[in-house]
Every structure is written in C-alpha cells, then in structure tokens.
Length: 250
Length: 284
Image 1 (cartoon, each protein chain N blue to C red):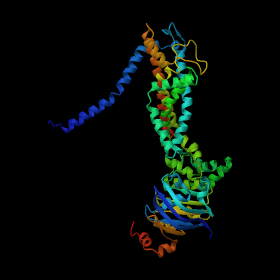
Image 2 (cartoon, one colour):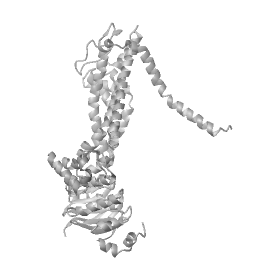
Image 3 (spheres, rainbow over the protein chains, first blue to last red):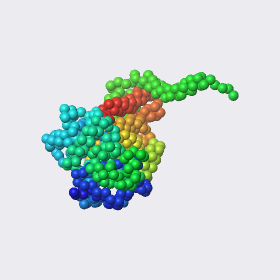
Image 4 (cartoon, rainbow over the protein chains, first blue to last red):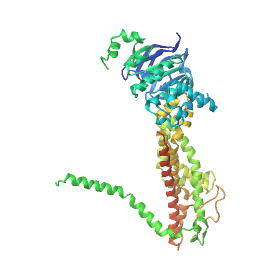
C-alpha cells in the first residue's frame, strides 16, 4: 500500500476567508477515494487544489503541503502536474471540434504523439477505456457537441485517458446524467481503478458507497471522518457522519 | 388632473417609442437617396479609373480611391496585430494590478480623443518629429492610433465570448496557457475579431481630420509610388471639390460621395455576411 497522494495541514482561502481545513489525508495507489458532504463543504476546492486548477482563481490562496509520489506539487511545473493528475468536471465540456480531435488534442500539444497512425491507436484505446468505442467508432469525425450528455462525459474521460495520467479527479461527474449513463460512468471508474488512482467527489451518498474503497466526509470546510467505505457507512464514528448518510440533514 | 384611459396610453406610448426607433432609418434613406439621385450620373468606368482633369472638374478620381485604400490598408496592418495582442494580454494574462488599470484607463481615454486632435498629434510626431513628411505612412500611423482602442475593445469582446469552460478543459489536460489560447481561444474568437476589424476599416475609410494634416494632398499628378508619398484621399478630395473649386459640376461631387459611401457600405456588408457565416459554423 503506497501513498500516491499525501495532504498535510492544508487550508484554502477565498478572499482570505478560510473555506477548507484538512489536517491529513492520504490517497493510496489504485484506490477510489470518495468524498461526500453537503454543498459548500469544500469538496470541490479540495479537488481543484490537487491539480492546481484553483491557482487560476486570483481570489484563492492556500497554506500547507500536498505530495504526489513524495514530491510537493506546489514546487512542480503546473502543466506537468495536470498531465499527471487529470480532472473531470461536473458538466461535460467537449471542446468545439470533432470527437477524434477532442481526444488527440492534448497528446498532440503535449508532444506525446506526432504520427497519424499513433493518433489512431490512442483514440481507439482511450475510447475503449471509457467504454465509448462501440457506440461511436463510426462517427469519429462528427462534432463532439452533438453527442448526448452521458456520451460527452465519457468522451471527457477518454480525453483524460489519452494523456495517460496517474491520478484522475472526478468532480461530481454524474450530477447531470440519467441513471443509465451514471451506471456506465461508474462502471468505467471501477475498471479504471486497475491502472489509475481515483478521487471522486460526489453529492450522491449511494454512489460513494457503490464505488468508493474509502470514503471521506467533509462538512463546513472540515474533514469530519475518513474510513473504509463499508465501515464508514455501517458504523460511522461521528454523529454528523451518521446524520448525513442516513439523510437526517442537508 | 386628466385621467388617461390605460389602454389608450399604452397605445400612445407604444406609438411614440416605435416612431422614435424608426427615425433612425430616415437619415440613412435620405442621404442615400440624395447622393444616388445626384451622383449616379457621374459614375462610369472612366470616373473610377482615370486621373482628374481640368482642375478636377473632369476626369476621374482614381488617385483618391487608391490613396484612401493604401492609407487604410497600412493602418489596419499596423493596428490589427498590436490591438489583437493587447486584447489577448488584457483578457487572458493580465492580473488586476495597477499596470492593468492604467492600460484600461488609457484605452478608454484614447477612444474619447477628438479626431482632429489625432491629426495634430500625427502632424507633430510622425510628420515633423520623425520626419516622415506628409505621407501614407504618417497618415496610416495616425489612423492606427485612433483605431487601436476600437480594435482592442472588439477583440476583447470576441475573446470573452469564448466560454471560460473551454479554457479550463484545455488547461486541465496539462496543455499550456499559450497553447490553449492559440488552439482553442483564438480560432473561436477569430470571427468576432475579423468582424470588428472590417467594421473599423469602414470607419477609418471615411475619416478626414486625422489624414488632413498627415497624408492627404490637394492634388497629386501621379499615383502613389511608395508609403512615403503624399496621396489624395477620398474624404479630403470630397471636401476640396465641394468647397474650394469654383464651377464644380455637381454630379462629380455627389459621384465622389457615392463612391466613398459605397466603399464604407461594402465593408459593413462584408462584416455582416462574415458574421452570419461564422455564426452558422459555430459549434457550441
């Protein structure tokens, strides 16, 4: 059991107001860590700190350390970090180009592929990895904007797989999807676990219990409890956790 | 106090507002009608392609047309790259600090300067100080400074219209900020930038005051050879033949106005068509 990510004494601020305090969290290699909690509890802030997307927000500031494979991510080059730590947003955001171009976009500009035949291979592998290949293999050159919401979200997963990251962050990836698309996305997450380390932020407590190896509960910007998913859902240690997962508040 | 019937007052106010809006059409139609009616008879192939004769009273206006086109194209070649780069910096990179605020303030103020002041400025800086003389390049530099705030503003609007989420998606894949701008933001903002550029060409084609002192000549007996030449320009030529030359045939004056108007309107039409075309092709 190797720690892929280790977070120490992290506090995050917007306009100098503290929104998140995490004394310690580790993420083990090849596990799915689910993060649950009501709105405004700092889940997304936590996620966007891990690949430094929040550094784009000028009102944001932070203290503390995050380590990826033992190296402090705040000392790393941002582009390299984001290549290693991919992120899936709540709303699917296909880029305004064809399905094929969407997938080769990042590998091409990161200099991972140059030859057309290599690109074809990457597209096929990525789409298969996101269980989308069979549905759309005949229309790779149509606009990605014309796909359904669930397909778009899986395309975004494929786009991340194409750059072969080590960690994938899912930020409420199913909040806009119907139950069947949700099931497909969850299915691919469990498959992806073999190769990647996954952190899943979700509003859906049941989703956390279905896919998470471990689950963390955030409340009002504080980490309340983190434990094996079975344990946290069956015998939560804190009263707030129990109230939240049984639906007694929020 | 008289109480109005609510239905009647609704109708009255509707009528009033509608008339106010429609008034905007009237000057356009009247101007077009008068110019075309009086000037159409002067337009001929010879009028467009030959030199003026007998003290501008006969012959054509070719040097003025070419002069205007060369000044305007030089001005756009200067102002467009600078303006677009400035817009990219302000929109994509600039932090909200003192420098940014000063730049923005300067742009707003630049847009508010009267055009004759630009003319005097160009005369002082480009013509006299930099010794460019009264020339195409001096006029083009003057016009490009005048047009810079407009190009920056329209380009920024075009960049802003590209959804922020596209940038986020691209950055989250490890693609650098410049590559994101180059491959995602710019291609999607290009239609808006181009439309803004074409409209500003239309606008500066008709400007008189800035070129009056920096580029335009009363009469040049040959076509422009280099960017250091003085040239005739349509708006200035129009001013001269309508005020300075006695016994000027009226249809030549109106004909010249018609040519200028047509150049400007053609540019605007191209901009509108381009906008419709790009909007249809847009994928989001």
